[in-house]
Image (tube, rainbow, N blue to C red; front, side, top):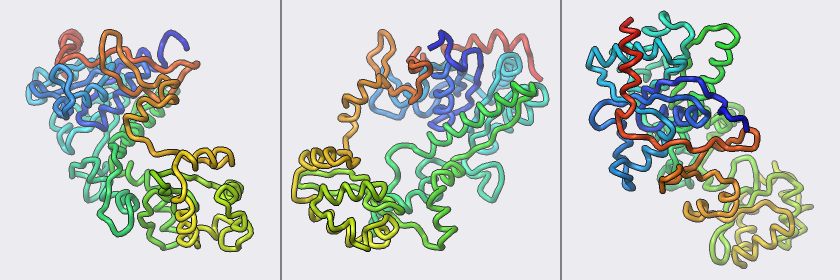
Length: 385
């Protein structure tokens, strides 16, 4: 890997809180950018108290989302604080990310409309709840609300049971990732033209993006996708099965793999059964096939089935708990769990390598306002717009 990380030399100002914008900022920081995280004085980002567990009074959730950043405290109601932040953006920022409550950023004088006329090279990313337009544009939003309203809960869990959210903040984190993708695209355009611009994304649009395949399926067929538990709507068998002592995920993702599975289960005749011989037929006849496989899988242990399916070349996976995943030999071999020097906290790094090396954990987030001097120096010099 080269000595400099890919985004070394860029300065990002993060006007964000909770998960979405901070996750975007975290990605950019791990890629080498200087990320200046702006927080309100006093309590700071709400995630500082999203615990336990805590470390030195700050929730570990906050640390995981804000590693490698430089936090500053800015009172948006104070004209002097706003002027200092504005001056810093004018003098040094390449990118601004904001996910404040709808309407809030306009009241600060730090919106895209306020800043870009004075700094045309600035890339400004708005990460909102429902997007720039539409009847819900002024409403706030949160990850579980978007999982519900965006349809994700309707296909998650099991039919006939209460809706279930995806256990991780998939909408917030996905919106953070889309922000990064948009920012990098805009920076590429700036390199060509010298001009920045506005990037818009939202939690709701992220939910719709995750629903790409279910929505396409509905629009093509008119059939409303339903919750299938661990199963996939267009592939059979592709789901969790109960064994004698646990569970096993089986992924026979094509006809060749199904043939191998049929032989491993002792039912080679399924390969010639017109109900099951092609994936489309298996999808139509899902219930009888799954019932037959379930009955067979229940006769032996998980370990026995893993051995048999591995020998047959059928993809499978034992469901693991978080503690098992953290200690799994594959996880450890990838060295994706990182620890800063002299600190006992550990976090998951980026799922990326550059020239065979993963961006390192360079620093844990210091206390709120620890980098306020950044604004004092450049903000006073640049002054207000």
